[in-house]
Length: 597
Image 1 (spheres, one colour):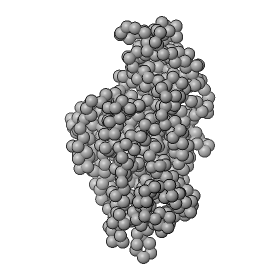
Image 2 (image 1 turned 135 degrees about the vertical axis):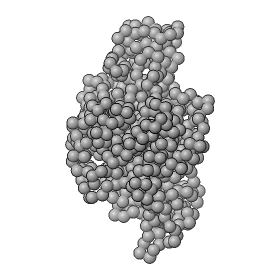
Image 3 (image 1 turned 180 degrees about the horizontal axis):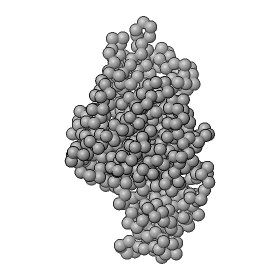
Image 4 (image 1 turned 180 degrees about the vertical axis):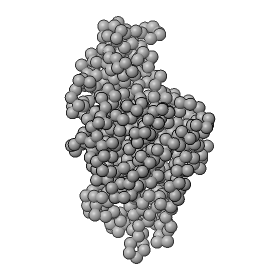
């Protein structure tokens, strides 16, 4: 592949030599070297030709026989949640016994200087525990501290008496529709709140400050740099969180490209209010931070939670349901249609969490209905998030109308065959139908859904290629895809999803200089060796942000804290999903209230 310089004169600012360059264009071309000037790629080709573009001040990055590819684009990742799940903000309470959980709370109280500060925890699992933790467990060790402990799935919260008192929860409190306030034999609340009833307490929990969220974002960004990730899609954020990102970008501190989707909420009226309050970002490079559309939350997940909406029932006879407002399924479908129509009327791209086949069919129908009446401009690039059980006929419909799919090979790797007792072997094998989607012509992006799984895209590539479960066994080998197809789903296709394929996602001349450098032969390595490969350098806009040449060391700021985050979150993610956790319900880390993200 011959090197050719882009317009402009003078030597390159950066050249990358000594590796195998994967251009990741549609022709799957390879090269030996890359040259960068002013944040853009000016040449890709032979090492001999690229060396001619070096000067006295050119920075030379030696790939040392490794692989160079475009910066990884994790197209569904909750950056604002990564570090705030860890101490000192939140304590891990994914314990095996109530006694161990109480000990965590006791230690947290002892470590807290403010005698009335809230104690937050996350991760308890009543599939693992003999029962949910109750106020009667927490009160003896919490003193005057209100305690709020969210379960592994974000569908339930346990609180102590002090928290219930602040929230005004009594035996006479009526829960919101769909919510549950658990009570004891005497009719008194136990402190266990489920679904919408959680908001009774969340309304009085002090929110994280913008400064705390900003600090978390910086630590999370350092982790992304260590993984070679230069772009993400942040799905389902509130306007306050968007303001934090905008402030970081304006101050020159936002170290990752973010395409954001605003949270639609459970009804059309709420979305209209959000859109009325939203103002397009000013003074921010849209190639660094851009609001593309809205995130709609359609259903749950088809695991032990059994909350995805299915045409045919789970093995226990239930079907799951939609999660939008409505007293009947017909009302919910109508509300889903209206939410999507409101977003499309506003010229917004829509990404909808839909895992069950019934939900996916309803979402695709809603996309087509809203776009079929001349209500919007073309090429909004709507997509289905997760698409676990997308029917084959629906995949063909999606392809005809260029509706994308955003899948999670790492989550499929984590689940393996564990959901056979819930879905049966046939649907378990079909789950995450990569091969069928690509064969139908659907554009498929891959993502980690971090912090559910860590943003280890190499694990995702391994899982997509092998369909092997974390704990052994292979499910649905007929849905496996090639390594290059998997890499495309982390580079070029997410750029399409982000409406950014003209300037990122490949290493072609004129594209932004976002690069990931691996320490080995990515295409030649055995599949089992992929998860163990490391990123030796990450380049964002022509600047080395991770690696020996990066300012501030080899891993940037937050290296120690992000190492702890990896260990803890990986363990927690495995426990959660193995037990059927909802993979996509997180909290807005400024409001502190649960919302569908």
